[in-house]
Image (tube, rainbow, N blue to C red; front, side, top):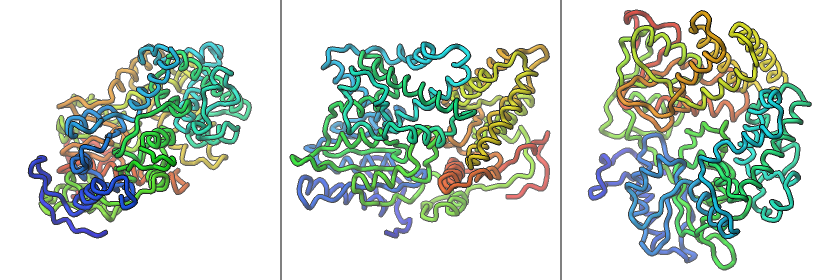
Length: 552
């Protein structure tokens, strides 16, 4: 379907004038409303959206066209999106996150067993407590973080440790909830896929055995009402908890759904008496913004959704955010993206040098890697330019690595980090996992940059405190220059964006097709964050004041 950008700018609900792309979505909604429950009802739809294409507005208009007799829910990826959807959706549309649906279903099921569900925050550290009961303090420092990551990924993939479950837990697990088989190959695949740090085969075996034990114990604790965030979907699917049925399920940011997310959404779909799917799915996503595979998201989520739910594809290809010059840049990666007829030319520059004074408080600086951002942040602070670095989990990961080194002094830490980096790079290279090398080097470089700023006499705990303070937030504060990785920038926008070290994308270590594609996805996300001006800048080119010779 080839449309040209001929529509007018989106307006409030009462005067909404759809683009040809949006009109096709509305026509689908009208046809579903007229034929639902019959053989003439159109199949589910997957909406191939581009960045800044008004996904929420389009989804709202589709759901407004559906008759009130249909039971409808809008399912979002996170709470922030849920709140935004709830504010604009018709009153007959339920709104929830995927986790929220899982939480309510799991709580109802547990209450049916006579179990009282505890407060989520009270169970934040339940798996850490399990680890402490299983491992010695030294073992915890050596492999605790790896086990925790493996358990997290097992939940995302619906890997139920059936061989380690107690009889109490086994009686409640349903076969349809075991999405990934509990075999060594499956566990090792998760270790390799998500770059979990393993020194040798013996440590690998220990990590897998411990992860099985932790997950099995965690599931038993869930049966007693002790559940936390990532139990909400995993346990709901594993225990086959009953879910409410909907005629239409609308999902946003579906490129970030993992295997258990898709399984839960299947459970929300209304069924015919023969068990076949009667409900219809509206799956809205941007495959080029699939950059969260390291968290368990499926790089091929949209293709799998289309296959599993029998979706037809409809495009949403006009961006209302980006000016013409940025759209042309994005078209090198996504030829289908279009600008609006009223889009301004915008500013696109490749700066040979830049100065601290160039940045404004509401600008954004984004980079593929963390270390260059941290280095720039210290330069800006030295020039008395206030700034913030987003990424609480980044800080937690750095601290975990520091603690694993068990260094007595900062000098000792420096040596141990360098030795660990050399071992890890060698190990990953030998295994053909070159795409994970950049992550190892970025972590070490980031720590060393911060270490280099510490005052004489500082100790390891001072370094940890410095990192905790630097990476203290995930949300940008207003009127403060924001520095963040591309992964943190997803979902954000600024009038002016500086892309730091464009040459890092795609990373030279990205060798596999999936790794190379995710690197290009990162570049696409970066290019589509700005509304007016975008500049490429490079580390090491900051000067006291801007120099001549800049190109635009």
